[in-house]
Length: 181
Image (cartoon, rainbow, N blue to C red):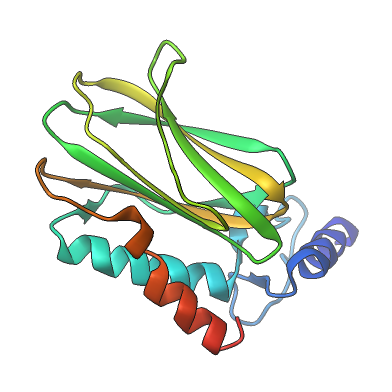
């Protein structure tokens, strides 16, 4: 209970916008049920990701798996394994809470070589990758400046579709700012 309260206070102090996934905001009940960082949500992050996801899906891409959420401290990274097929393109979208000032996304091949990185500045990141070989790749999210909650979503779609990465978060970020998130 004390650990849950300390984590909730830390997340709130860092961002001022964290909320438990449970709509009542109630902490976990039993021993071993301590909420993880991935159980917390940021309305700002959710709004940005929903807006960007809508744009991507109208352009022929479909969500691949569940959203990946967590908390990163300054300069920390988290990595997930992702099988990818040649002849298919992937979009990786990421958004961070306001205290996470610079979020970076990168994809590495199975030998550890970086194959692509996002070119966006700020708490939002997006990249497109069309592998020439099928195999296991690794998607890394990194807090380059600041600490906070993040969410990453991966989408799969056909080759040949142009997507401007800098347009994906433009509307969602503006709307979230107007609403004070």
